[in-house]
Image (cartoon, rainbow, N blue to C red; front, top):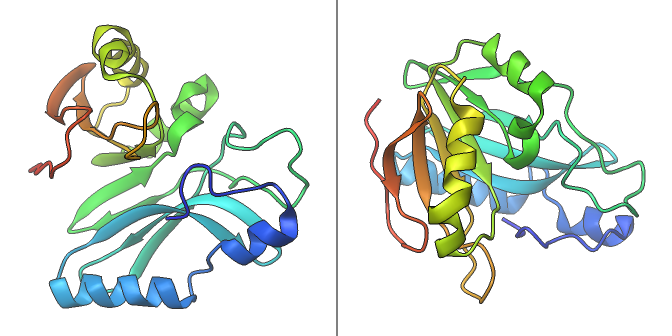
Length: 199
């Protein structure tokens, strides 16, 4: 919600910009989910107690918050970040529409030890929101295959959702469903739209 570059790494300023689950903007999103009977998932900079996290929230179609996942890998932080910028303690599952979900954020899946912990959950679906700013050419010719290879050991469909920034050399969007090391469904990078997936 605040954007990939939404932090300045000055704690007092970042804490004011971060959201808690009880903030007004979250209440507005919960109402939208309820009014449109549609579940939502989005990344945001979260303030929890006195700390700041890179998090992902899931709101169900009743407007209830059913999951908040805090990124567990440290790659989201600049070296100047103070001790108040923290990571979550691990992965967990949640149920949405009778399916067992697990979430990983961006660099979480680039650590072998974390991949092993995800396997232990035996989820039906994985959400993988991230920010990658490859050029479309570089993504299609090289990086896409690296991402496929990285998640091929995950037994459930992996739903990768990239950010979109309408500026040069920034994130070009795109959604990909990886299954068994292949692209099962996609909204190609560089396209704005909706990817409908039935699981």
